[in-house]
Image (cartoon, rainbow, N blue to C red; front, side, top):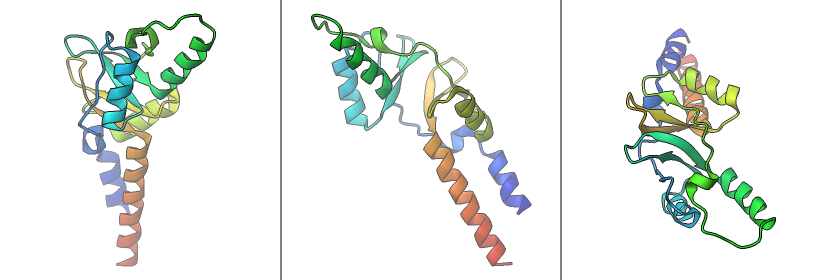
Length: 149
């Protein structure tokens, strides 16, 4: 049991993160962002500047908030990602433990975290589902080792 726990605690976000990160730019229109979300089958994406540095997050919640606000305005201009994104970025470093990521998600009440390299560029995304799947696998492994003992 101790070996399974030690392996679980040793896991890094790099072990479970999604590496193919959909990104959007602040200058993208919301229609362009929606197309990127659809093409990549994601519900959020890091917003990156020209150098690739993460400067915000655009999520499905931001789309919903935009739609609510649009109902109260006259006229429909082509809003950009910069107009609608969440500028506060909660992220974890590439070498962070899975436990650290889980704590940040819990503390900040978010479901996804960009995994950031030394230059502040997103290299992955870790989600609550990644953590749940890892926990399920660890529990199954533990149950299997206990039944084989």
